[in-house]
Structures are given as structure tokens and as C-alpha cells.
Image 1: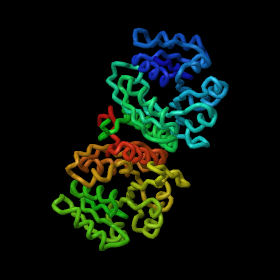
Image 2: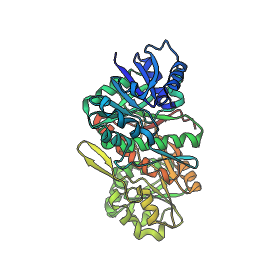
Image 3: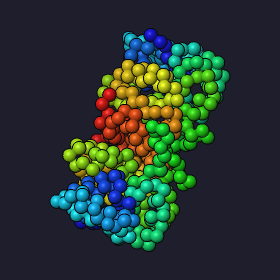
Image 4: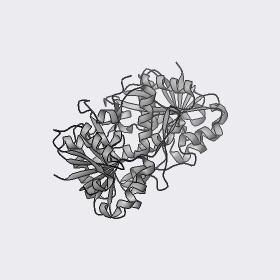
Amino acid sequence: METVGILGGTGPAGRGVALRLASAGYDVVLGSRDASRASEVATSLGSALGGEITGSTNESAAVCDTVVVATPWDSAIATVSPLREQLGGKIVISMVNALTREGRELLPLYPARGSMAAQLAFALPESRVVGAFHHLPAAQMQDLDSMLDADVLIFSDHAEALDQVVELVNAMPGLRAVAAGSMSLASPIEAFTAVCISINIRHKVHSYVKLAGLDK
Amino acid sequence: METVGILGGTGPAGRGVALRLASAGYDVVLGSRDASRASEVATSLGSALGGEITGSTNESAAVCDTVVVATPWDSAIATVSPLREQLGGKIVISMVNALTREGRELLPLYPARGSMAAQLAFALPESRVVGAFHHLPAAQMQDLDSMLDADVLIFSDHAEALDQVVELVNAMPGLRAVAAGSMSLASPIEAFTAVCISINIRHKVHSYVKLAGLDK
């Protein structure tokens, strides 16, 4: 079974993805600037999950077969740039959203290239960047008993890499992969995260995207 | 019962909204540059719906209590600008998406003010612009037997107008209103339409947005 590294994996988003990857049998390396913190988080996520979760540095996470970028948006490029060589030839999954809080709403920011996935693709020209995991509710992702049944919209300019991430996501409990299309859709998919979170703040709920009428 | 006018109401999007408004008991005036065409379409949508659908000019549609803009995006401003006075003080619902086709995908365009709703609000400073109806599948909207059960994400800077449109949408069969937030969310909500349509093209389905975990 291939291994998955998660850069900036100790935040709520990274932890949820790690837990559900390990449940699917993948060995996961949670990367962080603070390896001891990553070890603590990995331990707290538990064992007996099928795959093993270990905490380490971002450099160690980048050695894995597939690598997820789960850092805050404003440190994503600084995190991946020194790892360009290790990440070359690999699938790099961006779950990064550029968002800012304004009052009781989250609003999207539009990076110069339209999306954070496009910024990452520019910073990692030898990697195959795929976008996924943007709209997921972090609390439910971290609770395997939450009955989560969410759609993951996936985009990439690399058709084969997209197919592989579809397979990875469909193996994770509680998630259904939906191949959305090319990187041209990165901007609206990332930005829509702001809408999902704003609705949840406004209505005090933990709602998430599930497309109706999509039999797959 | 109040009346609803639909500017550019003879297209697939306008027809679906007209049909479901009339089913909810609203009298609807389908507006068009071509009033005789609008009359034909109104007749084709049928009678005995609760409310009456009549076809007429955009000028006549603009006289209604509430007005929906359902024109193609590139004629929306030209359509509403001469009607500024009639639309003053009213709720104007924008269902306009700026989209362009590229290969087998629909991609969002970003108008100068971020969204078509914002462009309309600038063109109609005396109106209260509310965004709604962006992500709906036109074919199912026009078929009252289609078992449609879709979410309508609604945004506005006018809280009371937003509440009124929530009520209007909840009265329409097959739709659930979700108050999303302010006009700051117009851009990601409009742009996400491109993702919905691209997924439907790619997978040859008629899927639509339904948020899970949102009990209202």
C-alpha cells in the first residue's frame, strides 16, 4: 500500500484526512514544522486504524508516495518550495483554500493565478497537482462515528493523477469522489469553501456538499 | 398574492422558475424582447398551476412586485438599465451567471465587480438586489414531476429582502432556500455554477446541490 504524507498535517483539516486515510489502510506521515507536536497529534489520532499515522517533519512527509498540502494558505508556497525536488514526479494534492474572515462570514481570496492549486502547480512544476478535500467539515472528518457522507470535488490537469486521487478518496470512509474537471475549475471550487463555512456559521450547523442526482 | 416578473424569462432558466412560482400560486409575467415569443412560451408552460403565467415585454415584467433577472449574462445590464426607475424600491433577484464554454467545461468569468449580482446592484442603485437560483438544473426545473429536491443559496446585502426571497423560494415546490450571507459571497456562488454544469457534462447526469446536515 502506498504511503501518504500530509504537509501541515497537524491542523483540523489535515488531521481529518489523516484519520480517514489510515482507516482506509494507508500509512500516513503527518508533517509539521514542529515534529514533536506532530508526534503528539499522531498519537492522539489513535492506532488500530488499518494504516499507521506517524508524526514527523514536513521533509519526512514529503518522502511519501503521495503528498497532501494542508497548511494554511499563506504558508503553502513557503512550505512546498524547499521540497520541490522531493515532490517532483509525485501527485501533490492541494486542499488549500485562501480565505479571510470578515465579520461572521468567510470570504474567498483570489490568488494571482486564480487558485491556490495553480499557485502550487507553479511552485512545483515537476509535480502533478490535484485539488481535493476543500469543502469538508473538519469536526466530522475527525470523528469516524459522525456518519459523514460527503462529496469531494476533484480537479487536475493530469488525467491519470486525477483518476488515482478519485480511487484514493473513494477508499476513504464517508467520502465520495466526484471528478469535476481541469484546473480551470480550481478557483470556483476553492472559493466555494467560503460559502460552505459561512452557511455553517450563520445557521450554526455542520453542513456539507452532497450532490443529488449523481449516481456513480 | 404578489406578482413576479421575469426579465429574459423565455430561456430554460426563466421558464423553470416561472413554472415553479406559478405552482406556488404566484402570478408570473414572462418578459422578453419579443413579446409574442414570450406569449407562446407562457402558453406552452400550461395553465391550472395555481398562479397564471403570461408572456409580455420586459417592460411589463418590470411592473411586477418582485422582478427576476434571467437574461444571458452579457445582456443583463443592457436589459435592466432602461428599467431602473420601474425597478426602484423593489426586490430584484439575480439568477445571472457569467460563464463561458471551453471544450467540455463551463468556466466562470469574473465581472469587474466580482459578480453579476454586484454589476446589477451598481446598475440599479434604488433596487434591493438578491441572488438566487444559480445552481438549478434547468431541465428538472421545467418538469414538475422530476422529484427535484434542490437547495437554493441566497445572498443579499439587504437582510429583509433576503428573508422575503427565502420565503418565496421555500414556497416553490422542489426547492429549499438556504440563506448564505451577504453580497460578498456572490462571486463564489455564481462561479460555482460552472462546476455544477461541468460535472453534469462530464458525467452525463443532471446533478444539483443539496447540502447535507442542514436541518431547517
